[in-house]
Structure formats: C-alpha cells, structure tokens
Length: 358
Ligand SMILES: Cc1ncc(COP(=O)(O)O)c(C=O)c1O
Image (cartoon, rainbow, N blue to C red; front, side, top):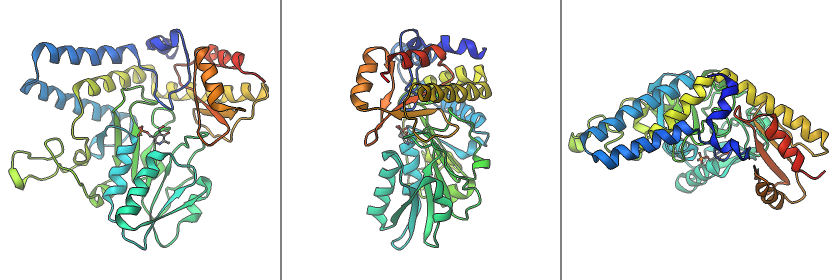
C-alpha cells in the first residue's frame, strides 16, 4: 500500500479532521473488521479448546509484529493492556528500599506518576524530579532508576541521551512507539512501555512492554496464572515463563489481539519509514502554519505532537470539536495539543487553521 492510500483506510477521516492520536489513534476499517470476525466466531462456535488455541496463536503473532517494529527479540516483549500497566510492572517489580531514589522529570504523565507514587508508598523509595533535558546530569549515587517519557506528552519534547548512564532507564513510550522511530538498543533503555491504542491505531486495552535481559532477571513478578506460567498445570510447583511472557497481561481477548494485529499490518503495509517521516513532516508544517497564524507554539522537538497557546483551551477544544476538528487540551497548561499522523494530510491542517481565531 502506498502512503497516499493509507488515509483511505481510516473511515473517521472522511468527516473529521482527526488530530488526536496522542489520546487514541484513528481505527482502521481492517482492524474493526478483524475484531468483529473474532466476536462473530465466538458467537457462532462457542469458546472451547480451539478458542483458547486461537488466542494463543494471535498472541504469538502480535508479539512477533511488535518485535519487528521495535527491532528486538520477541523473547524480550510482554503483551500488556496499556502503557501504564507496562510501567507499573517495571517500577513495581524492582526491589527499592528507603534511602534509594527514582529520578524522573517534572513533566511526566499520570500513567508514570501513578507507578512512582505506588513505589514510594509501598517501599519508602524517594522520588526526585529534574527538568527532562537535565535528567542525565541529575543522577545521584542514590539513584536506582531513571524513569521518564521518550516523547513528552505536553508538548512533544524528547528525552535527552540516557544510554551512557550506569543506572537502569525506563522510558514511557506512549507518545513514541508508532509516532517516531524507536530503537531500544540505541536509546539504551532497560524498559520501554508503549500503548497499542495511540500511534499504533489499535484497540483500547492493548500495549507492549520491552525489557532488556538484565531487567528481566531483576524484575519480581507479583502475579501468576495460566497466561504467564510455563507449566500452569503443575499445581503449586508451576514456574514462570522463562522470558518476558512472564509479564504478559493475564487475559487479552481474541478480539483485542486480532484488532491490534490488523491495525499494525495496515501501518506496516504503508511502510514504517514512510509513516514516520510523513507524520514528522506534517507536524513540522503544522507548527509553521500556527506560528504564521500568530499562535504561540510550545517548545517541541522532532515529534508528532504540536501544542499551541489558547486563551481558553477547554472551551476552544469544544468549539473546534463542534466543527469536526478533534484535538485535546492539556490540563494545567495554556495549550491545545494536535497529534499529527501519517494518515493526516494538509487538508486536516488547513481545516484546523481555518477554524482558529487569531
Ligand atoms: C506520556 C504518556 N504516558 C502514559 C500515558 C497513558 O497511556 P495508557 O493509557 O496507554 O496507559 C499517556 C496517555 O495519554 C501519555 O501520553
């Protein structure tokens, strides 16, 4: 499929200027067809051994598709239900003690903050913040983990180079995977948590977690069941899966898995390189257009998010929504945030600009 044909895969774009993938991506028609087919099969055939075998096969295919995208071995990937779950598996699985600290930035999303708060309450570890750009220099002898966004959710800033740190790094990839190229080896992170429902255009309740081999060895796993045990029928002697499957979500439905796979294959067919470069160049273009229009563009980097000033962000968001333009406001900031994907085109950007007051 050519990149220009990609747009036709998304029915929502026929009537909306959809600029909200940073919240939830547009759903390709093929993904809803795949989910419906799974539901209809269950309705028709019931859910017995073949159904569980089907879920198992879909999980294996999805894990290999994520591995191809992330450029890592599939044994290092867990299937999760969202970014937040992946981050909490990592932060909650490390044995912190009082007197140690986790270093994070001062612009993190509640999805990461929740995991940090839980660790502080449960272990006594302290949490220290520093500006995202200065994180590498802020590491102290007490730091046991650096946890921050790969791409900041408020304005699309990028994490600084953290590969040379000698403490483990957890990256929140909610605004990264699918939006910008992700090479976990080059990023030098020990864990990368990402959603399926945002820039990968999959269903709610999907996601992936990468962990390095050394991180996998260190993580305690606080939950066990049929899904993440190697020999679930071994009674109390059952042991965890030997690889990152031990971190898998305990109940992913066939419809979620099939929907995720179909969405990934729509994007992969268009070509990941093209998907990334088109989205990044359209986002750059939107930032220029907003600037020419007299709107303040928030500090950003080479990402697919463009945040810009608004006198009343919630009211302006609602007003734009009435005109068929979908984006979001960022609580606690004077900004509206547009998420620009390869499925968008200049007409979406012009529609937004045409509806903005100066
Ligand atoms: C940077 C960041 N982290 C985490 C999340 C939460 O993602 P999820 O719903 O996949 O847990 C979001 C969602 O908007 C986000 O932007």
